[in-house]
Image (cartoon, rainbow, N blue to C red):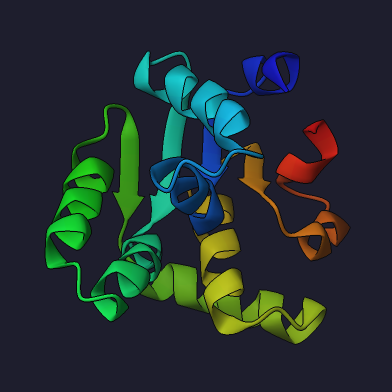
Amino acid sequence: MKSLIARHKTIALDTSIFIYHFEGNPLYVGLTTLVLDRIQSGKSRGIASELSLHEILVRPLKLQLPDVADEYELLLTSFPNLFLTPVSRQILLKAAELRAIHGFRAPDAIIIATAVVNRATLLITNDKNWKRLKEPAIACLDDFL
């Protein structure tokens, strides 16, 4: 994975990357650390949708852990070289196109559209269904285990 991400200046991240990292998922935390360290160091620019913030907060709020939700929000919004992109009209139009062509669910289409609109050349996820896209390049964490 290290050599793959080294080739990309702008990397988009699916919500799962943050969830695995914040929750310390033993299968994926090594890979998520590698990706997030590259972004934090400024070697690559990170792109994420503000929708990811919404998705990340659901579990701690459901478990009535507002302090954890606050910590996740702070981590995501203050992470160096990570740009949280608002869900704009341009992103929604691209997401609609992706849904129409590929049948993606709305949240997935919005995250992918965020990557496309922000010209990310790599999108890191763990959703193998996204691999049918031609652009951006898709990297699934499971492929690197």
